[in-house]
Length: 361
Length: 167
Image (cartoon, rainbow over all chains, first blue to last red; front, side, top):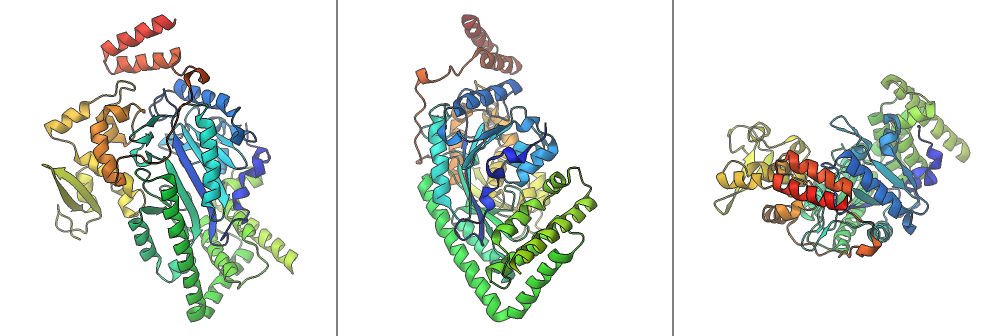
């Protein structure tokens, strides 16, 4: 079975349409709630049969859940590795669910419900990871959607809940609200002005943390940071969200200040840097993923500073997602070696930028 | 800051350990931390997984004494996981583990989250009649198998009786 992406609601990529607030700086907002089904061992300790029963119980319940009425269910455990990587590259499933880690091969019963507004990963580290993904900076809307799904699903499937500890999770770092809210934010200004380390230190004081583009354990590439709450217990969901909103607003303001400063004090250096980045993307014949990410970061900064016009944030988001390995292979219709993927990436980026330039000339 | 163990290298891991009721802070370099069994790969990228690192560090540091050994042997009657299993993986086996390891976990949660009490959304489980019967024969058989593997024969006999009734 191979994955037909056309079957996914909006192709599963509506979160990158740049329609949300501060979309040039904040790529996306994600909130996930970790839940476990009462009566079964947690996923890591459950046997194959137990995980399959969790899946069938959730599938039965999902039929009556309004929030999932337009969703599709994908059996991740039945997909070939390239398709699992594709879903991960679209930020629709975690690395763990996709079984991309050599130490954690895909589990039987691993599945995902994908809807236009919300989704549910089944048999991830916890039985259920309810999630909402939104374009731009949109924590309240994302929370409202995922909380609605939580209420509906929780009234059909009994969750593991403890009066003192809250929603019970496999890892104690998620217990309580089970909520991780995060924003994927592009901060080249703060990185270039060397303010980033101060910002990161202050995040920690606020009980927040940061990760790279693909969540836990991933590196920071292209100046993209995922900022999220670190603690999940002892505060209400609203308090955790308020803290995050307040800090992200401050970070956005500081990023904007840094950009103004850069333009004022080093205008020509920045201008040269971003046009070189654009030139490379527009004409290079081979691009590694990291190279592409770094140049795209420069061009994104230029679009934010209005140094380059006629290039939409949506196109930049698309380039970010579609220039990844599994997406290139999917477009080419075959597996690619590393050098082939570098050539395919450069070709894809070049054509996309040329098309965009042509429509604006 | 210098490593408290080798006094040579720069420390990258901070451990907080309870010794005789007082908290002791240790700063260790990657190598010395590894010698004490503390996973320090996350330490290379500071805030990433820092909390997990704290959990792991405290779990690892807790070993050794007679009291710790006794605590390690505590076994969850639902999934048969021991506290030692939790220390090794950082993951609990099932919801009932929270009850089985309650006192150790309460302390850990307070340190990790700064609080041990959930004050967020409350949950009302679905009414039993609205529920598909959660405990099926298959699950009981899974529990039976685990109980036998864990050599908990009294529990196994109990589960077997319940299976017979259902059958």
